[in-house]
Image 1 (cartoon, rainbow, N blue to C red):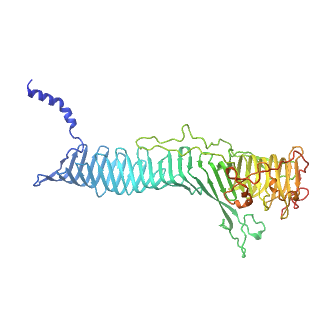
Image 2: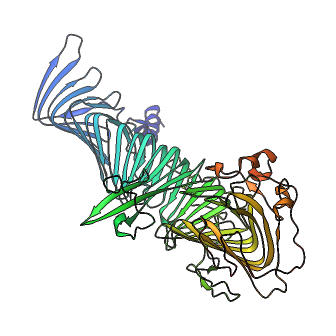
Length: 633
């Protein structure tokens, strides 16, 4: 074989590899064609070619067309004008004018640009496109439209390979789920997921609620996760929910807030305002001024409907806890877990866990579920016979807020091309606190406390399990006490009307002759009922089959100076967050107990096993001998 034949064979065998090694992309120099070509050769040999009419340039898989253009052989660049189009598989750029550098694969559209990327369209006042990396930069206002959302901003970047847009300054995203405003936002078109930072405002198109925060991860119909100065405002519910982090799962109608969460909700109650001259003034009517015109106090507004005048009382509910959860399914439920605290008008409460049921207007404190049987104690004639009706709330399961949803907790975003992995707020919180309710001058404790409202008005408080009630008097250390397995407080027009103590009831009630202390009444039996008039106890009755209901009246001489010895077993005063001045200031001088309680006595009164007592006794001189209540002066 000759030397030339051998070389020819080697070249033939290597030719496919040589072809593969040749430039096929933008690293190639451009080729061009046009109807008219004017070539100018400079002294250094560089060429300047004027092109017009069906101008076309090609560099690898990039094809550029325009009405006119100028090609510079030095630097392999071109200036193109009139209906410029840069086409690359999957991406098309159009602009009035483009400067293109073939050496770097960089296209500049200084006066407006449109990029079509599959089913997305991006427009901007100024655009730059890198054909090698398939990345675009925009400024002077940019808009992205695809089948799922519309994004606008002052400037931004788009990656055609990953289908990811990052926009900055005055960013807005509009989709079927809502509208997002932010300082900076990254949008993954493949998953419809957004990650936003800075001055975020998310407005829901479903209920017009507003979410503000520092950072936001949002995937429509899947999850919203917000962190940093979170605030969720609902005009429909007149409520604001705040915290450090919020997670919302639309498919489960579930929202959870952690990091010092707080709910503030305002309620308005409309009631008729009756002129005082009619003689039938409602207890909520407004006092008239000197001219006879009703005047509203600071917490009331007046409105007129037709010829009638009404008052609008505005009550605000505040709830705090370690974790707040909202279930908005068939049965709307709000759960506060871990040092849960609530304040609503004269009502305050604290518990390890609290549940709020919107439709039923029920508040359940403690391990109960808001379905405790409550007795309607609206009437009794002072006899041993007590007619009772049972009131219960709707049935159905109640979620345990300490349990995770599903098998592995909340659904998470999978870590993939978006590089973001879902996070879940802390799911475990401590629940050590005894349920406590403060109302007016009373403190209530028990294993479970359920509060019932009707049309936003307090109607009944039901305490079950180790139930204990403490009320203040004007005299120091004289606390009225009532203990039983079950306590029921009936309330009408913001005033306690009756209290029922059922199962192993015991009471200590300090007596007064007008304003002067006059001994103490202590008793125990199966059932104790207390009637109230003008906010004060007017009558006490003892009932039940228990043999020998026990009770006694202790004269003042045996009480004065020994008030702290008259305590039922389990007597404990707890610190009240608000209006604690209603409790005797002297109680705070006797030491702190666990969970913030203030013990007022280490001694308790043991009731005798048996002694004679009438089934109905008078509690002060304003009560008649037959037990019929009369208003205290």
